[in-house]
Length: 211
Image (cartoon, rainbow, N blue to C red; front, top):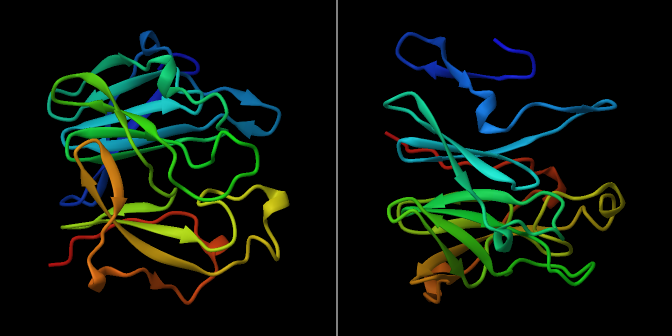
């Protein structure tokens, strides 16, 4: 492959082997870049039969179609680039690729709930979404579940936010999507569930379909 190209592999659960897929063409406009000792990171999310990939600057999506094994490019509008955010995240739910931001535009504000933009994979248009979701979020069969920090931002913690402040308690909250908004479920039996571990112990969450 060409220098600085991005290789693409998938795990075949049946054969228990890694399978090489078509590498991302340089025409997609993304490549790994090394600044000192830091490798510039990419953000990805699976959306049914496609995989959406972008850099943390949200310049554009590189979209891989799993069935046809082809690539296409999707522009990201300025309104969805969030220049005030260090590291947004992607979340897919019911046909929408949400470009989430986890910190208020007001410096040092805590908590989730920021309005954001989402890409409609069916109509191929961008829509505005009221509200937001925490960084550590996963889809369930009925609800979207997110881990909320009780004493700090619902996001990856910066070094100065770790320690006593970042070692706070946390809980799982339940969310439902209503039209173009995300909000807490109001059912009394879906109150937040406190977790027995510290928030700064989280690196990533995922949902697993049990047999």
